[in-house]
Structures are given as C-alpha cells and as structure tokens.
Length: 456
Image (cartoon, rainbow, N blue to C red; front, side):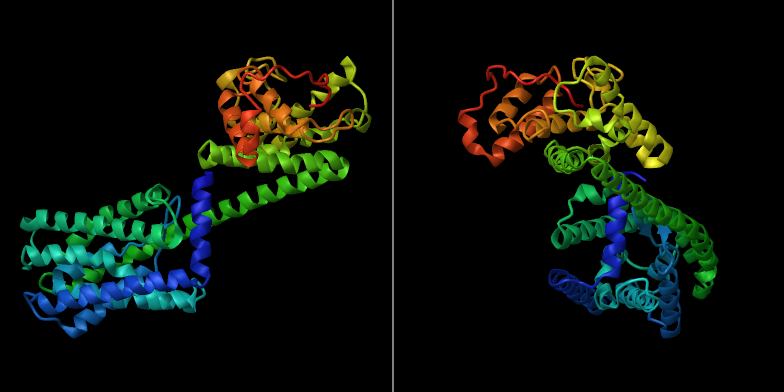
C-alpha cells in the first residue's frame, strides 16, 4: 500500500471509531437537517405516479439497511453495494418518497454498526446526511415522469445515475473540505472507487427492477449477490488491515534501530533526530508526493544506521581520518542497506535511500558514483539536511559553524554536491526562520574554508 492510501485508510478508520467533535457535530447536524427539509419538500410537493405500499416499503428499507452493512474494500476505503436495492426502490416505489426511505435505512445500518462496535454510536444520529446522494436521481425521475420501468427509458436512468454520482461527489467533497480540511485531490481515489462500484452494480439493480415490475419483492432476489461480495470483501479487508499493521511494524522497527544507534553513539542519535525533522520540512516545502516524503523521512531516520558496523574509535576520532579509516567509514551506507534488506518490505526500499544518501549531484559521491537524477530524490534531501545539520552542530573534531556560513556553503555546493531544488527549499526554510540573514547571506557568497571532510 502506498503512503497516501495508507494515510487515508488510517484516517478513515480512526474517524469511524471516535466521537464527533463540536465542528463535526454542527456540520453534520446542518447537513442532516438540510437533507430532511429537502427530502420532505420533495415528498410533499411531487405527486408519485402510484401510492406507497407500506409493507413493500418496509421490506425495501430492511433490505437496503442489510446491504448497507456490506463494505466493499478498495485501495483507500470502502463502498457499499446498495445499488442493487437502491435502483429497484427508485423505479418500483414512488420516487419522491425514496430519499426519506433511504435515510431511514441508513440510520438503521449506522445504528447496527455502532451496536456491533464497528463505529461510534454518536454518529448514527447524523447518518441521515449520508442520504443526500438519493435526492438528485429522485428529482430526475420526477422531472421526466414516473412510469412502469422499461428499457425504453434507459437514457432517463442513465441521467439519474449521472445525477446520483455528481450529487454524491459534491456533498462528499464539500463535507470533507469544511469539516476536515481535506482537499479534493485527497479524496479523488476514494471517490473513483465508489463510482466504479455504483456504476458496475447499476445495471444489476436495473435488471432487478425490470424483473420485479409485476412482483416488486422479486427484485430482491439479487440480495445473495451482496453476500457474495461480502465474502470477497472480508478477504480484501483482512489484507488491507494486515498491510496497515505491517506498515506500523516497519515504522516501529525503524524507531527501534534508531534507538540502538543512539545507544551505540549518543551524538549520532541526536543528529539523526535533527536531520529527520529538517528532512520532513524540506520535503513538505517541495510539495512532494506522500511516497517520496515517507521515503525521505525514514531514510533520514536510518541514514546512519550502518555506522553500528563502524568501529567506535573511527566514529569518535577527534582528528582527521586517514585513508584507511575513511574507506571503512564510507562502508556505512552499504552496511545500512544490507541491514535494512534483511528486514525486507518497506525498509528494504528505504535501504536504497540510505545507500545513496552520500552520493553527490556531480557524481563524485559514494558508494556508486550516481549523479543528478540517478540519485533518489529522497536521498538528495537527506544528503543536504545531513550536511547542514553536521555543519551547524559541534562535532568531535570542530565547533559548529555559524548558520550564515552553513547557508553560504549549501549555496556554493548547489549543483555540485547537492541537488539545486533541495538547496533552494532548505535555504528558504532557514531564511524564513531567520529573515535578518537575507541581507547578509547572498547566493554569490565567497567560498568558505571548511575542515577537511572526515565523517560521513
């Protein structure tokens, strides 16, 4: 599972099991009240072509509530196969009353999930607002006149489906933006999955409605399909939950390795924490995708893990390293990759970032002499942040440099040692924190004489 999907799924599961905060309660209450007002107005003002059979309405509501509890899991969330009941309800019951009946069914589903511990009970009271998707297709059928379901009216049904998807998308995106501050792009993958399920099951629901023209209850013979989908979905859900747990395990392993490194060398551990924070900020400033941000964060966390294999007398040597010692020091990136490859999975991928964390933009780095875009972007970020932190902290062989000197060094080596885009983002963060440097630190600052490199 990629980082974006993992985050969205975790947030979705977390929201489901926690209570509503004040903002959510107010927003969902407004949404629910608005739906009730609109649905009631449609039922009062629009005359259905035939009366409501209470028994049939109860049967459909119960069937919808049952199917609504079936979750079809996708990459970032889940959908429900309710189209197989919703479409027959639209075509076999008076369309103006269907939104209200759908709201009742959704509340029943939500209450049942809460009682089983699958969701917070407080959310059930506001579940009415989830029925907004039913308003637009009901209005389409009312506008074009209800009648006996027929394939001759396929274009009306297609228009109703389009109205359903559009209306549902607008409400979902609006609610996510207003209540959770989530941008539309963050939900597009989830919406595509929901739309795919709705669109693929729409013909099944339509065929069920056509088959139930003379005996409406017969349209519910498609309900076993929901059970079949449930069987497949449970396997998918178990797989996705295991993926989430595995992701947490990898992160826990990374933190454990970091702790081992700190125990082995206190300075390196503190240095790693600082590099992680700076790396995350730079990746966010660059607007990178979540996979790259995760790789950069974990790469920063583990970029020095291979130093566990380097003798302490080399790590803590107060003077310059000789050629032999320097060659041993440079093996720490390869050792780090080897250690993470043994863990496997996500951390094996992070191992490529660790291995490349001391490559240079001009190809003069180690261990593979990669250059330019051959170097993983996450590794480029780690490299620049690592160097900046090393320059601005006390080391065993020299005192920390002034921040203005470190910034000038970054700029001097942009395009040679460091990726220019990373330097631009990193320097902008530093100058943003210390704006008074803007006049004293110029891009053409004179080269700074630094001590000869002696630690990776």
